[in-house]
Image (cartoon, rainbow, N blue to C red):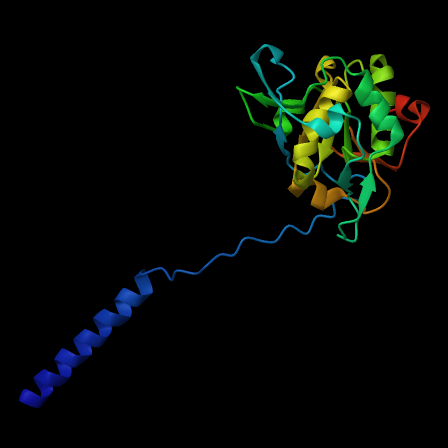
Length: 240
C-alpha cells in the first residue's frame, strides 16, 4: 500500500512538471538581421544621415564664432595636409600656390575659425526632406579638385533653386572644415550644408576620384553617381 502511494505521488509530480513545461514559453534569442543593402547601386535607398555639422543653415542667427591663431595660413607658408588616400596611407601634399593666394586675399584672415551650431550639432535625413533631389558631395577639404567643384557649385547656386547640397567630409578631416568654410563662404549659401558622417561615407564611397557626388531623388533613391570634377551642365538636369 505504501509502495502504491509513493508511486502515485511520483506520477503526480511528473505530470505537474510536464504541464508547467507545456505552458511556459521557451525564450529564444532573436538576432537582428545584418544590413546587406548595397547602397552603391542605382535605385538603392539613401543611408540614414547622421551629419555632424558646424552650422544649422536654417538658423544662422545662432552661430557662435571663435577665432584661433593659425600663423601658417596667415603667413602663406607651405603647410602639409593628410590626404584622403583610399589605401589608408598617410601621404601628404603641400599647400598649393592657388590656396595660398586665396588665403592672402581673405579679409581678416587672422586665424582659424571654429563655427558651431548652438541649436543642433547633428542633422538627419528628415532635415533634408524638401520634396526635391539631394546632392551629396563627398570631399576632402584639402583637395584642390574638391575646392574647384565647390566654387563651381557656388557660382551656379541659382541652378539649385529647390535641391539641397551636402558637402560631406570624413570625420578625420573635421579640423580642416572651418577654414574651408571660411575660404569658400559656405555660410552665405543656405542651400549648402557642410559636415561629416563616417557611416554614410563607408556605405556609399566608391574609393575612386574625389570629389564623389551622389544624387538622390525626392524619394531618396540613388539616381546618379559622379567621380571627379563635374561640369555644371551635367548636374543641371538633376537640379530642381
